[in-house]
Length: 225
Image (cartoon, rainbow, N blue to C red; front, side):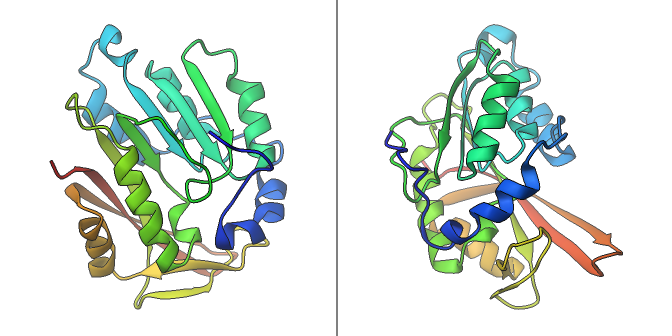
């Protein structure tokens, strides 16, 4: 895969400095609850010999806490992130794992990934792109998801809004905008990309200092074969 120069597409190219500063020396070490629940429900009953042959991809892995969850499950683990700081930190922290395979710099819009994956995490990242780029990313993720062995599942989340708008929403410093979506639009985007929705969860929390509520829908999806 060509990753020369940490290629990133569209909006993401404007946000690198913000993410590099935010995640520099991050102490986040453990997967978030929604990722743990997804992995436990889908893969905890598989024996180790089965899990060690499953290929997993974390899209936009940030500090690497969710990617570590994939590694700890024994999966052959890959990751991609547009932040050079995040890429270097993950390589340093988790490069000793025998089951880590590739950690790429870039994003799925601009980098040509030739692998396919049985497990894909796309959490906390796709809504940093405007709607037209989200549609393109979903088409790419559909092609990256392997369904030949029966284990192919993806966990993805979106930010909820009252209307579909690409708007200022500074949940991280130096970020300009995120794509807020209504719930029907989220479902339509996934279905238009030919995904089958198997489970939906909703999370809500408030940050008093920022006076903002964070509302996200989490979708467990598979390919429509």
